[in-house]
Image 1 (cartoon, rainbow, N blue to C red):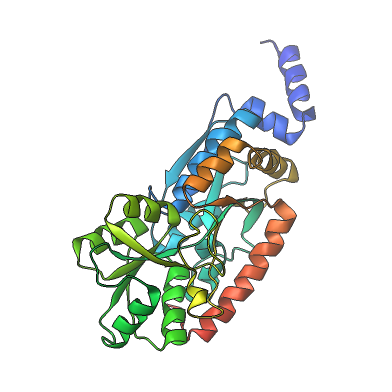
Image 2 (cartoon, rainbow, N blue to C red):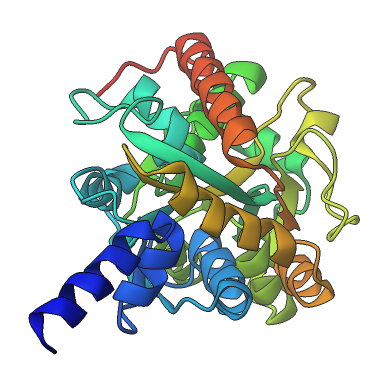
Length: 320
C-alpha cells in the first residue's frame, strides 16, 4: 500500500463509529468473557447459552474464560484491570457484582464504580439439598434435625451470597448450621453425595439433574416464591417468612467503555433474550432471562449492593 492509499484508509477507519471500527479492526479477534465461577455452575451455563446466540446476532465471536476463586473476586479483578476496548467482559453473579461489598475486606474494586453495566442475563434461585437417602424429607424436618445438633450440621457454600443465606436461616430459625466454604458449587454436590457434607445450596439446574439421577433430594428454594420451573419445590419463605434470596447474573465490562461498545453487546443480548431457544434452555436449568439494559442494570446493581449491606448487618456477618 502506498502512502496516499494508507492515509486514505486511515481516514476512513477514523471516521467509522467506534463499534464498527471495533468489529472491522479485530480481524476475527474473539471477545473474552470471564466467568468468575467454575465450569458447571449456573453462572457458567447461562453465559455459554447466551453467548452462543449473541454471536449470531452481532457477528462477534466470544469465548468463556473460567476464573473461580475469592468469591468471584479473582475473575472480576481481571476484568477491572483490563483495557475498556470491548474485548474483555465479565458475566458475574450477585456475589462479585453486589454482595461482596458487604463481605470482603479490601476486595480491590467497587462494582458500582469500577465496572461498566451492559446487560442483565439470568434470574434464578438456590436450592437446599440433602442426600437422597437422608431421613430428612422436608425443610421443617431439616430445621428440627439441625436444632438437635447445634454447630454440627454442615452446609457447603461457594459465594458470599450463599454464605448469607445460611446465616439468615440460622437467624430466622434459631439454628447453628456450620457453613463450609468451597471454590465452587459442583464440589459441594460431590461431598453431599459422598457423605462428608450434610447439605448444600446449589443452583436449580444442578439440583434438577441430581434429583433426576436419584443422588440428592430438594428441600426448598431460596426465592420468595416457588420457582415456576420447579413448582413442586416449596420456598423457604413458606416456613421462614421473609426469606428471599434470588440469584442473578449480568454482563459488565471494565470502567470507561464507550456507549457504542456497550450498546453493541446490550442490544444483541436483549434480542436474544426474546428467542424461544434461549428461554427454553434457561427453563431447563431452572432459570429465566433477566432483561435489563445498561441504565436499569446500573440502578439494579446499586440497589442490590445496598440490600446486601443490610442483609449482612442483619445476619451479623462481618467483612473478612
